[in-house]
Image 1 (cartoon, one colour):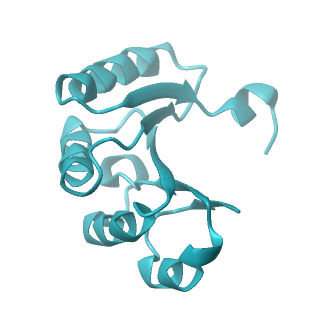
Image 2: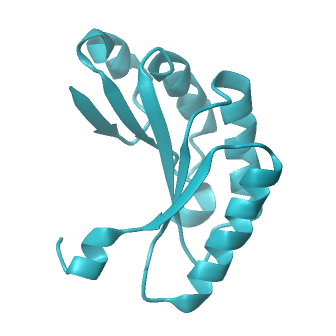
Length: 128
């Protein structure tokens, strides 16, 4: 079974982890979401998820700060250093986001994180 999740509800993950094969976990970056930080729940979630095949993704927007990427890297290195980390452009039609995506991916590469870049394809296809 494939689970796509916000990567916050680690107590719920404990209940279903035995039924899951692959986990697509989001890191909700505070600078991207304008929400409180979820670093502690993300860390707890990744501890549990790391027993399965897992990858992490984070949405990169115009307000995304490098400090959020550094905190993501810290958690990844602490829990599962080999986890793939996908940086996903919030708006594939804004050119400056491509530069930001490359800049943030370079930070990850310098920290030896398995980083990938992509965009939200559903926005290109016009699917909601």
